[in-house]
Image (tube, rainbow, N blue to C red; front, side, top):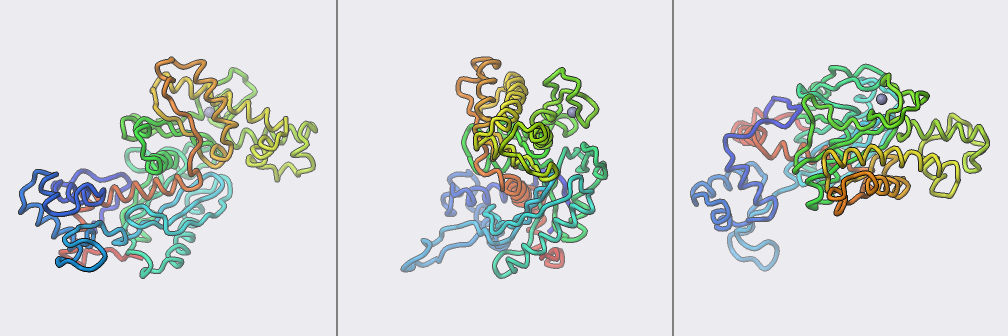
Length: 423
Ligand SMILES: [Zn+2]
């Protein structure tokens, strides 16, 4: 395995045939040597060589060469999902979710841990490491393949250099290399991206419909952000900051002050932080029977969502205002980028369901160009709790099984001294 530690997927391999053959076997599009020759148009000799390499790398397994009474048919080639495992973590503002998966992205175990709001990198990453340790203990090597890579979703954008940007007032993340931090401990390649991009990738993987090729994924947690998939590819913008929907100006009310220094940002009306603030104000005014009697410090965004779903009028109004603000932002984005699918997810957005999708639908239908809204789907996330880690694992697996990393894997088989100290 390469000692090069990637923070972004590495460049394409010179041996695209190896990758092409593996991908066809993995996807189940061609699972015998004759089928591979037919589908790829490559010579029989090249296909046999590449299949032999993949078998030596333990990434492909062959069925028995003589007909047996059961099991796989002779000569059938299958991807070996347990040839390795992946650790993935999604770092939110108030907690982290971590998972261990096999090389097909199948989640073997997950764990969650709360984080103090505004945790600095050393605190957040040490918490992630502790959870990784538990996951590796839960799944000893005999119950999984060796660790092959790590995927990390962080709060806020990651630049083209792989360094995090400090987009929170809490500090400590500007110019920080999360990849270096993990690679120094685990000695495997590390992929790092904005948490919301990982969530969009996870949602697309889960749904695997055509609509996901042009998708706007809105994450509402403590803050609010968006991930944009355009023509099947994550859109990052010139410097990796695309998707900061939370700072779109939605209101000219100057009392709605955002931590970014502006006022009227979407995040001041539609975010976990905002609805908590409005919920506490409603409780203090005696407007909310649902929140009545709760100490203000204990009121959290999920209580406002639960209150609205239970029919509490004040909570419902707060969510309606959040939905209306989100609708304005999403309608503008729809006119600009013409998505086929809008998914509302995240810790708060996933729970809110129709409280957000309905006002967003109304706003989009009213304000966006009819041709852009006719077949537009607007839905809640199918699996908001693990979309982030599923996407992180998927990003790692795509990286490991393509390009430079796949070549490095093969080199490690030829020269075992290159093998990383896998956990
Ligand atoms: Zn702002």
